[in-house]
Amino acid sequence: MFSNLKPQPADKILALMAAYREDPRDQKIDLGVGVYKNAEGVTPVMRAIKTAEKQLWEVETTKSYTGLAGDPAFADAMIKLVLDGVVARDRIAAVATPGGTGAVRQAFECIRMANPEARVFVSNPTWPNHLSILKFLNMPTVEYRYFDSETGGVDFDGLMEDLNQLKAGDVVLLHGCCHNPTGANLTLDQFQAVVDKMNEVGAVPMIDIAYQGFGDGLDEDAAATRLVAKSCPEVLIAASCSKNFGIYRERTGLLMAISENASLTPVTQGNLAFLNRQNFSFPPDHGARLVTMILTDDALRAEWQTELEEVRLSMLGLREQLASELRRLSNSDRFDFVARHRGMFSRLGLSPELVEKVRAEHGIYMVGDSRINIAGLNAQTVPVLADAIIKVGA
Ligand code: PLP
Ligand code: TYF
Image 1 (tube, rainbow, N blue to C red):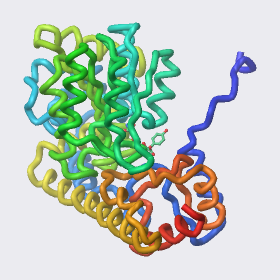
Image 2: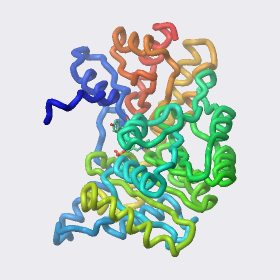
Image 3: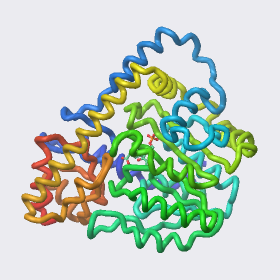
């Protein structure tokens, strides 16, 4: 049986992590996988998570199964965090999932069950796992233009032109904030124009929001998702708690499906729970429980928001430092987009050859499409990166 299996393509981001680990150079810099690191290069357990874990140890009396949808209190808390009441709660079906990836996967499967003809429109580029999962599920996929490599911003005209191909029932996958891998984001006005186009043809938005709080702030980063949610009759939202709660390995996420009216919600909810049952039965609970405790306790929440804000501002500071260092060394403003980008990532616009040169000659690891993880830098390594970028001739 196993002799029938064919080798599968490796995850390029994870392969890069392994290559970095094997590099013997002392001065190497890892700007690969999207994990937050502080100035010491450490991915800490957030203070509020530590406190909540301590409290949980005291009060938790059972580890028996939750429901198929996970703990309803987790869904309520996350729906409030992401949507803040812009949609009536009785229109929202929701299930806890193993991470944001689990939510994305279940969202795609839900689309396929509801409408096997639906094509999923994805930005070019997008998070590679979107494409990989869609391909695995045999779902028709259409790429829309997104990134303008000249300006480092969004190619909005190209995007709107490509969305002219939309037909009723197609799905448009949008990043709620902090676009991965580019760092370039639509303005709220541009989101509104996309919403108008989707509503005109009867296309359904799906939002992947994995970095709420990493861009402009918790509410600011949810603004686009809230705009879409209140403007469209049906919406899918995949939310991840991995980054903003720093609980990557706990696998904590939520899938939300907004139905046109409340009478449809029980069947939608039943289908999401059914999908959980087919794939893994009960979702992981530990991370979800910590998130619920933090979001519903004033002191824990304040502690979490303070640290999240420190994380956000540290990345913004590094962006500004890198942009200004590149302005000085290149004697131009052509890298200023780094300061305009938001979230963990920026696509620098280097060719694969230059990315390889930066790695080979300077020990700096970025993803092949020239995506850097801003949090992989610190005040001392920003000038090293800027120098390497200019030295290789970018
Ligand atoms: N969606 C995007 C765009 C991401 O970058 C990530 C990555 O971390 C995820 C979803 C899902 O993350 P996780 O499954 O670790 O929650
Ligand atoms: O894009 C990233 O780096 C993050 C983390 O298969 C990640 O989203 C990377 C690869 C992967 C899952 C998560």
